[in-house]
Image (cartoon, rainbow, N blue to C red; front, side, top):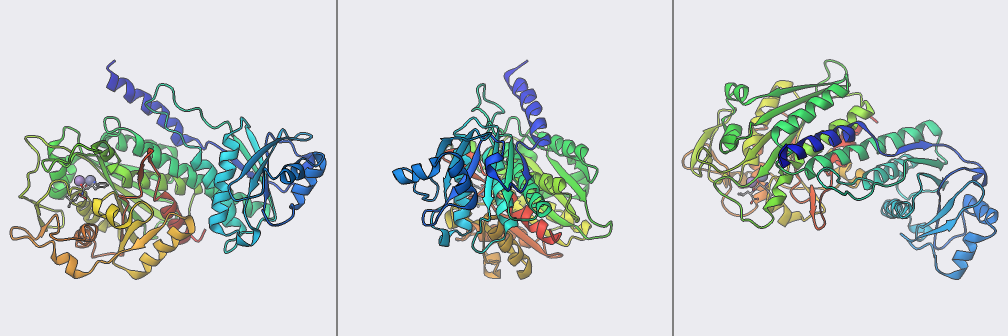
Length: 515
Ligand code: BES
Ligand code: MN
Ligand code: ZN
């Protein structure tokens, strides 16, 4: 077997497992007397400016004053992010003290720092189980559900490791089970933990798919993963449209992108029916360029490898679909992924070529590297048939968006103010934030062409905006939003996919489902 084929089988086998499993099992239980608990690691939070919580004092007493002793030494002060491991007491093998900073400043951001510190603290041990003693921990501006969901999502997503194509992958986290003891009623607490771990798992699926190299993660591979997801749930049905079908539908724009590659393009349709039969669906459209060389408008060599991440939108859609399927959200969601590879060859589309989109608009391909909008515009026309409640496309669309917003905010565009506000709110809630950008007609004018209805690039500045305006021309018949995730879908140093915007999208859909 050749190296490539060998890698292929390897990746398929491992990804099959990843899709099926949640790495950490979370459960909620009220622990009244922590000194009688059995765990490999009891996590105790400590504020820098207030006395020990009830559980902390009980454990301090049981351990002969060990917690107080560390505080008195001054080695551990309860400063935010600080961790200290002590030998345990009774059936508790070890105590992990985690600093939370000042009590009156313990807001969402400080709580996130706490979650990260819990993860780092546990990661430094070989504990297979942990007991998080939250007592009556209160976060300013957030309820118990928010805290629990954030904790399971963070612990789950931080535990991700890339293992697919390396001979000796980093060892996995030992942690398998986390019990959280808190003041919230048990059923509500468990629900929040389950939602967070489903989202965390969705984030990891997106990261893993995006991290796979372009020689494994091809449009056919994405189609295969979609079929696999479809088989794993009764609520999810999957349909793959081949190039022949796309030609019949008149998708000349999408097909112009795949003209230069040997890999067949796929239009992947996943239909999740969690709501009533006639409820109009929310539609997610993912850019699935499995490698973007630029085509004949070839990209420069530096960092070109990162263009394997040009299917980050598709990966985010897969991760979101997995999360909502696990949660069994009571609504209908349709995912459409426009999967293709953008390569140069004798048959490739050339700058200046004019193509006809499914909507009938002609497009002058002034730059073959502006291919994302060319595949998305036909997908946006295709989804009209679903009479959607909303359509959101997700795409690593423009380098200009990275210039504008860097890596902290996703660029958000919408033709309906309410939809924009809902997405902004979902981003804030999940700390997977977006920033609202304009879709003014002055920008649309920059797309004028002398030889077609539209050019595929805008003259002048505002490259992320003109790209969005191009898409808007094809999204006039429904409420639509576009997320430009070029700056947020992956990190360059160290290199790796982030799983964004799975957190934002999952939250958006949970809000629509009233969960
Ligand atoms: N996939 C790229 C956008 C991209 C580039 C994302 C770098 C993240 C980092 C997209 O297909 C592209 O090449 N866009 C061009 C558009 C230009 C030709 C108008 C770009 O941004 O340079
Ligand atoms: Mn490109
Ligand atoms: Zn691209």
